[in-house]
Image 1 (tube, rainbow over the protein chains, first blue to last red):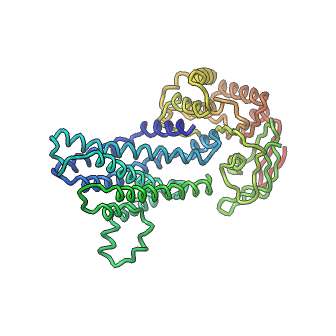
Image 2: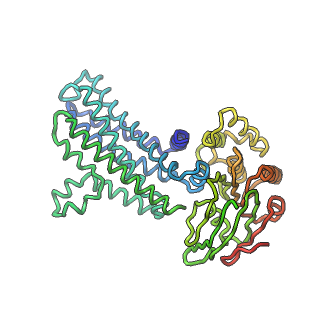
Image 3: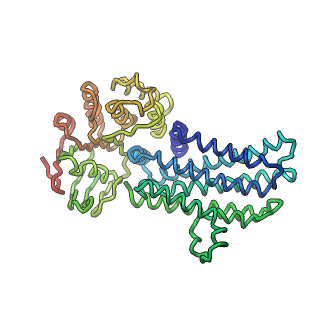
Length: 240
Length: 203
C-alpha cells in the first residue's frame, strides 16, 4: 500500500512542470561548483549540501502546491489511514532527497574522472563517497521537510507561507554569520533548521571523520523528522 | 447500527451549520441529505467520514469502515484517467488484470472509453465527474459517500450511475448522498433528511 502511494505521488509529480527547473538548477550548481578546480573534498561537499538543501526546499514547496484536498480525502478514505497517507508523503520526499543526493555525488565523481583526477586537492576514497552521500541526503531531507512545513491546510495564505519558508531557509543557512555579526542571543535562533551547523561541524577538515559525519547526519535527519512529525500531527488534528 | 452521529455541532465563521444533531445510520441504509446550497450537506458527509472535525459531539463508527467518496468537483490532474484509475485499483489491492478489466468495463459503461488516455486537466466537467464515479466503483466499499454525484453528467450516464448505486445497495452497501436532484433521490434513497437551520428533519 505504501509503495503504491509513493509511486502514485511520484507519477503525479513527474507529470508536472515543477520537475525541470530544480533539476536544471541542481545540474548547474554541480557544474559551477566543480569548474574552479582543484577544490577541497570535504569543503566542496559541504557547500554542495547547502545547495541541495536550498533546491529541496524549492522542490518541496512545489510538491506542496500540487496537493489537492479532494484527492487527499479520496485517498485517505480509500487506504483507511491518515497516518499511512502522510507517511507516504515523507517517504516520497525522502526518496526525492536520496535521488538529489545521488546526483550530487555522481556529478563530481564523473567530472573528476573526466578531468583525470584533477578536480579535488586529493584522491577520492570510498569513505568520501559514503560520507558525502549521507550528508547530502540528510541536507536534502531537511530541505524537503522545511519546504513542505506550511501546506495550505496549515497556512491558508499561500503568499505568506512561501515568504515565511524562504525567510526560514535564508536564516537557517546564514544563522552562523548572523550570530557572529549581530549581538543576538543564540537561543533566539535555536529553533531554526540547523543547516549552518554543517559548516561548524566540518570546518576546513581535509578528510571526513566518522564521528562528525554521524553527528551531522543525525542532527539534519533528526531535525527534519521532528518537523515532519509536527506537521503530520497538525494535519491530523486540523483535518480538512 | 453502523454509524452513530451524537450531538454533532459545526460552526463556520460564527454561523451555525449543525446544532447538536443526532442521527443513527444503519447498515445497507440509503440516505439522501437535501437542503439549500451551503446548508451543510457536504460538510455532514465529511464529518461522518471523519474527514472534518465537528466543533461538538462525535461520530462513532461501529467498526473500521471502507468509505469510497464521489466528490462534487473532481480535481483536474496531469495524470490521464487511466493512470489515475490504475493507481486507485492498485491501492484497492486489485491485480493488474482485474484493474484493466474493471477500468475498461466501467469506462465503457459510462461512455468515456475515448477519453481515458487524455490528461484529466483537459477533460470536461462531466467526464471528470465520471472519473470520480468510476474510481469509487473500482471495488465495493462498505459506505459510499456521494456528493452531488450527477453534476455535469449526461442523461445516459446518469441512468448507468443510478443502476450501479442500486446494485451496490443490493450487495449491502450503505449509501449516503448529498443531492439536489429529486429524481436521483427518488430512485436510490430509502430515507431522506432535510438540513435546515442547523437541524436535520426527516422528510
